[in-house]
Figure 1: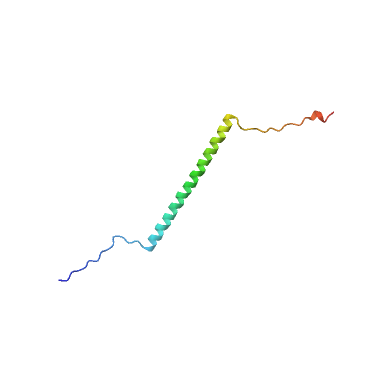
Figure 2: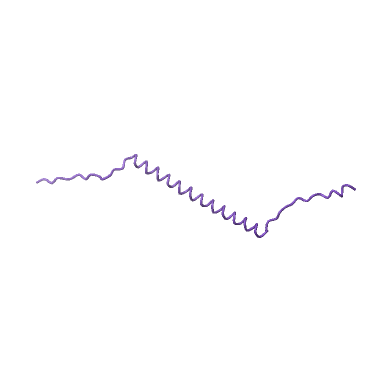
Length: 77
């Protein structure tokens, strides 16, 4: 008796359009991850800068430059 070979049927096939869609979505996901990382670094920098400004204002370490009015009595003599 001759043996019959059964051909295996694939459960799911990915077409070239499907692979292109997957590649596009992976690229979009990486773009979102990198954008989130950039925003997080920017937020941390802004927070540290704000905390430094608050500390400077609390301790009075900033110098305020006030204009000095010229003495007009010297010129009236």
